[in-house]
Image 1 (cartoon, rainbow, N blue to C red):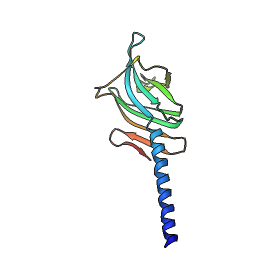
Image 2 (cartoon, one colour):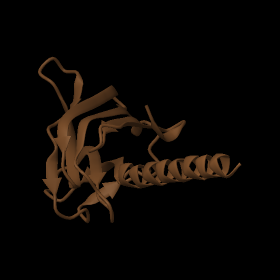
Image 3 (cartoon, helix red, strand yellow):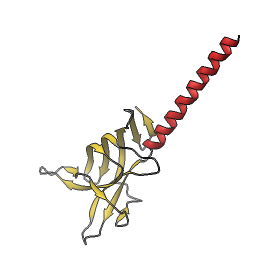
Image 4 (cartoon, rainbow, N blue to C red):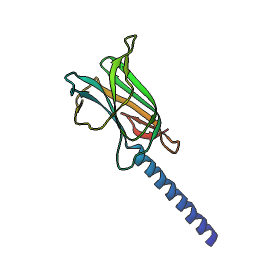
Length: 148
């Protein structure tokens, strides 16, 4: 009986530790966010996406995929490595005329960027990435943040 109680206590401790690790990982993964913005600081409107990896607990994320919709249609970007910080991905057109998001540009301050709060044509559809422990995460508008 004592052995059985000790085994149950050990199993409970392992489960608690695993829940705590997952909670910590989720908190770090939750520092990755994206939203559409307009930057009018240079007397021209530059539309694009802010990709933010900031917060009290951040990490380098890998194999980042951003899928968005815009009035020109679906657009996305893949980023191999994303260190902590705020990045601007300008919305442009490729040589063939298709929509694209440019290479991420590090942004020191966000005050020049106006978020698109009511836009129905400019949305972030999906954000997926791998954390420092190799866990793959996925955020969608429908389901929020989850592990893959």
